[in-house]
Length: 208
Ligand code: AP5
Ligand code: ZN
Image 1 (cartoon, helix red, strand yellow):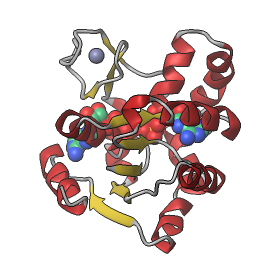
Image 2 (cartoon, helix red, strand yellow):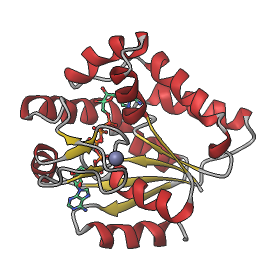
Image 3 (cartoon, protein in one colour):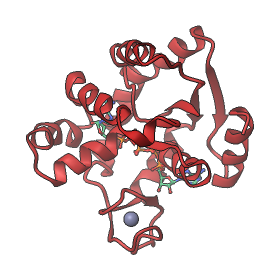
Image 4 (cartoon, protein in one colour):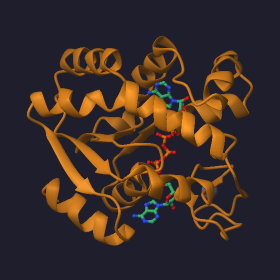
C-alpha cells in the first residue's frame, strides 16, 4: 500500500490513516505530526515552522520535503506507507513523483476524503489530540486510548485559524485533486458519515 490522503483540514485523513496502520501495519507519514514533534522538541525546524502553523499557512516547501524524504527512507516505510498531509501543493506533488520514481516505486492511489467546510469547523473545534503520539479523537476524551498520554487542543484548532487553514487548503491544496485525477490514480470517498462507514468504503476503494 503506497497512498496519499487528500482532504481539507479535519476531513478525517488522520482518523482513516490510524485505522489503516492498525490493520495493515504500514507507515503513517503525517507531515503535521512530524512538524508538531519538531515544535515540541524546539528544534531549529520546529521554531521556524511554528509561526506558519499558528497562522494557518503552509510551512515552506523545502523544510517539509526534507522531512518526508528522510521518513520515506526509514525501514518501516519500505513495505508501504500512507502520506497524510503531504503533498500540499503542486510543487510538493512533483517532488514526490520524482523522489518515488528514483526509488523505483509508484503511488497506488491518491484518496480524497471529501467533507464540506461547515462540518469541518465543528469537528476541528471539538478535536482533541494526544501530546505524546498524535492520536486524535473528539471532545470529552482526556486520556489517549492508544498510549495513555494527555489529550489537548491543538493551537491551530481555534476558530480564526481553522478559517485560515480552510482558505489555504482551497487555494493551494485543492488543485491536487485535478493533478491526481489527470494521473489516473484519484479515488474519492464521502467523509461526512460515521468513521466506520467511511473506512469500509476506503478499504473497498483500495481493494483491501
Ligand atoms: P496537519 O496536521 O496536516 O493538519 P490538517 O491537514 O489541517 O489536517 P488535520 O490533522 O487537521 O485533519 P485530518 O483530516 O487529519 O482530520 P482528523 O482525522 O484529525 O497540518 C497542520 C499544519 O502543519 C498545516 O496547517 C501547515 O502549517 C503544516 N503542514 C503540514 N503538512 C504540510 C505540508 N505538506 N506542507 C506545508 N505545511 C504543512 O479528524 C478531525 C476531527 O474529526 C477529529 O476530532 C476526529 O475524531 C473527527 N472525525 C474524523 N472522522 C470523522 C467522521 N467520519 N465523523 C465524525 N467525526 C470524525
Ligand atoms: Zn497517545
